[in-house]
Length: 356
Image 1: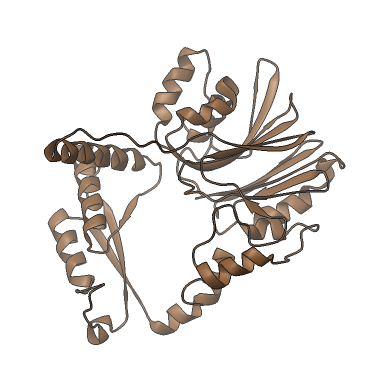
Image 2: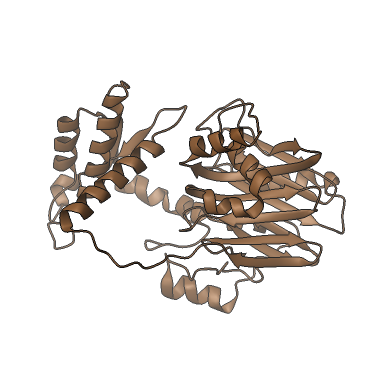
């Protein structure tokens, strides 16, 4: 994952505010430890903390492209699973590419189709595009809200970030908890009410929504809704189709220029996905896939079966790894280490969780 942040302000020359946006971006380095960059124009500054997965050299962000005399700049957190399909379509329309990153494909998609490109994207994402010609910012979030995105509109400006801490790092944002934010923490944690930013004047862009910010202010709209359809397939047809979807999903998500691993718990879900990934790796001649698991020190000694978890994970992890021939590593965590990580977990999440 990566971290994005930015600031649009009509009152100031933000080319002089690079240090402020760099400070905001640095709060996100745990999301993107491989690279950190800031780009600024007169009324906009964008920051990006990158975790490199695809195209290390040509996927650097913020990414700026000029097309037909118009300039656009993107910061993006996520992954597109239909990158190659979109690339072929854009090449046919006359676009060219300097690398093979999904970042460049996303930016060119926006250049070609505007915010309607969202209808074409298959993936998980939160991104911002600055249109220099129109002096407008587009913020968008994926259909199910896998990737987070928070923002605040105040005093003739907008600030945004992948996490609350990026906004709180700005000098004009005070960490004042509003009443419904406190209710979320006390009553719903670790969940939150969709759209709530916990703090006063901070909101979360909802899943499947976009926000356009220009000199007229912010306009928010929904670009996708789940539709219910009557199901006519038989049980066997349904099972075949689900299998096809899972195989397609796994194969698309294994695309990377860095090693990929599976988190294996020994349960049905992770075992099935690891089996599909192992089969795809075998078909592609990539050798055994990596798998990882976590267990607690002396869990075998103190584990007690219950309705929620009738078995320990470890024996099933071993069975699945052996059957699939994965390159497996298991991490044992002590209770002291787990306890010591609780403060770090609060910092990373920005909020208390079930164990806090």
